[in-house]
Amino acid sequence: MLHYDFEASVGYWLVNAHQAYMRAFQQALAPHGITFRQAQVLGCLAARGPQSQRDLADNLLIEPPNLVGVIDRMESAGLVERRPCDDDRRKKLIHPLPAAIEQWRKIADCGRAIRERAVEGLTVQQREQLHEMLAHIQENLTVPTLVGSP
Image 1 (cartoon, rainbow, N blue to C red):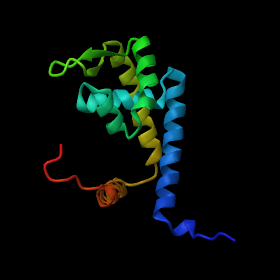
Image 2: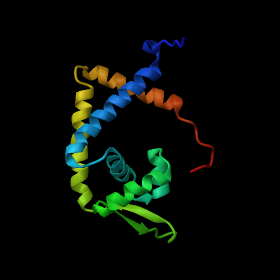
Image 3: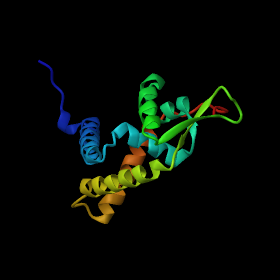
Image 4: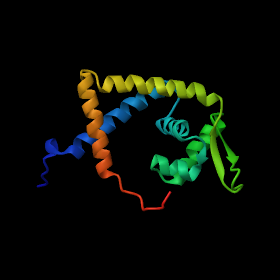
C-alpha cells in the first residue's frame, strides 16, 4: 500500500493552494472571454515589455510551440502583434496593442478580487508573514544562474 503524510507536506499544500487559486482566477476571467494563458502573456508584457516568443515562453515556463497558438489567437483578436526586432530582423517581438489595455484592466480587476478572496480572514501581519515565507520558499528553490549568464 502506498503511504505518504500529505497533511505534513509543504509541497502538497503549496500545490493545492496554487491549483485552487488558478481555478478561481480562470473562473473569474471566463465571463470576459479571457483565458488564463492570455492573462499570463499580457502580464509578462506588462512586467517586462515587448519580447520575443522564445523569451516570453521562457518567462512563462512553457514550451515555445505551446505559446504559438496563444499568440496567434491574441493577434487575431487585435491584442498583440509580432514586429521585427530592431537588432535582429529575423526575430519577432510580441507587442501589446491598444485593445490589450482594456483586457489588462479586466485581468487586473479579476486578480485583485481573487487575491482578496484568497487572503480573506488573514490579518495584515499574517499576510506579510505569508508573503515572506512564500518568497523564502521560492528563493530556496530557485536555481542560481551561472556567473556571466544573462
